[in-house]
Length: 340
Image (spheres, rainbow, N blue to C red):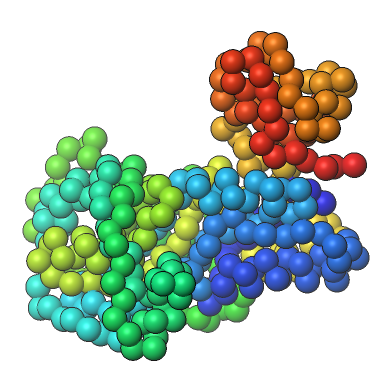
């Protein structure tokens, strides 16, 4: 059992609880108690969607998954800002101003590309060794430094329907969320390449809007929503947050908790386990002969290898050996895989 299980994380479940659920299913299915399990990117309990779970040797790649880009659907409700910047917190500011779609379309480019943002006070970042959310819940003032992130794309979209569930609407039970693919999603309301939106749309005042954002690691969608609302002359908070892509993984390969339990009881987890290689689809393979594979497994450096500088997925036939780094013809192990 080495590879990836992609959960469609339900509302109210934390990322570590998702890991625990996979561990429990592995144990109950008779797969053994010693299998390592970890997640490839924290997802808030009040968010849903793609949560990559690394199993076995794939846990050695979980850190790399944390650094990957993510894509989110999220809804901003205008008129109220909360302490947590989502529907869970208390209202701390209100405004009667509602932006028009024209104003929204005009402001979105300001939040595309490299930007600076201040993370939410209710976040897992540490302040003097303490989690920011613990300090905030204790009533202490939390001041976090601004950080640079990159918003690769940001565009308005219709309510995601099957792709999202409003925060606070906890019905349906774990695993009740849809697992449709991004390709099946409803088309965007407007794309910049299509020219200006129709005038009827431009003049429409918005109580809320759903956006899709492709972002770099470290981006806080709640902060992005806060800042967009402020730039529109009002305040707002997130009422729906759904991750539709994490690194190479999308909703197309995600399964519900119910499906996970079902496959575990049938001892069919191999059918939903994506291969180790799936987490490295952006890295070329490097074919090895048996002697080279043996040398890498012993931690030795391969010399005189005809490969461009960069990272590779070293393979002996169809068997992963290591994630390696090539530099000036030398190949060194970054992460070795023990699949024996």
